[in-house]
Length: 268
Image (cartoon, rainbow, N blue to C red; front, top):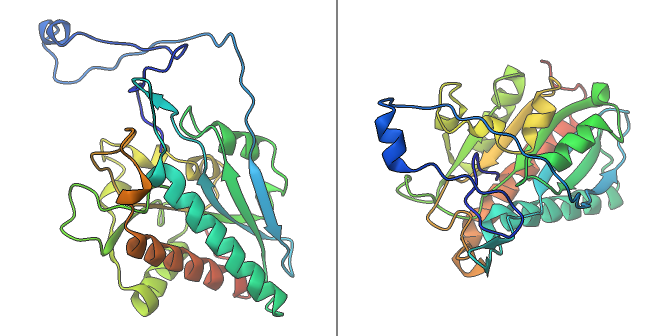
């Protein structure tokens, strides 16, 4: 998931530092700081798409970003949770849907598995897709976005939870289906704290679902919350809670299954 601001020190990436003593002299509790930069060395990146056709020309997008911040103080940040967890879930969901299709279970709507790059630099990969869609956005019924789902955060008392963001903002029906799937199959504690439009973290705007939401496409952002290894070299695979990751993956899969095989697309 991308940060507002810069916490890296990779060469050639602009770093802006505001001295705490200067902030104190301004005598304000909160500040809005704006700045601009010029990019002089463009870097290429690629989105990776997989598609299972449906009976109709409508599609469902399931997304996760496969990039990470790279380096922090000269150390490689592997990004096992952010977002190795999400891309792992995406691949497993795609594999399972393909098996179902091979066994003759053709979905009503097509399934686009979208692994995007450039998320950490400003949601560039998902923005490129929505600016240059392979399938018409008018036929895109929703996006299920998976970002940082393999760990417990510093707030929850146990791992049996997931934060859901955006599920009711465009489609109440999507929200209701998500709740029903959880109650029937998963039994997570669904935490909507970060879905509050007044939440200061603004997580709704900070992962790839947002570029779909901006186009009035219903979304759910599945998020495990922040932990001490967020954007650090210590975000390693040894710290992944694989039982939690498996449960989140099942939840997204079963939600997508319900939405892909039902006769009618969800209403906004």
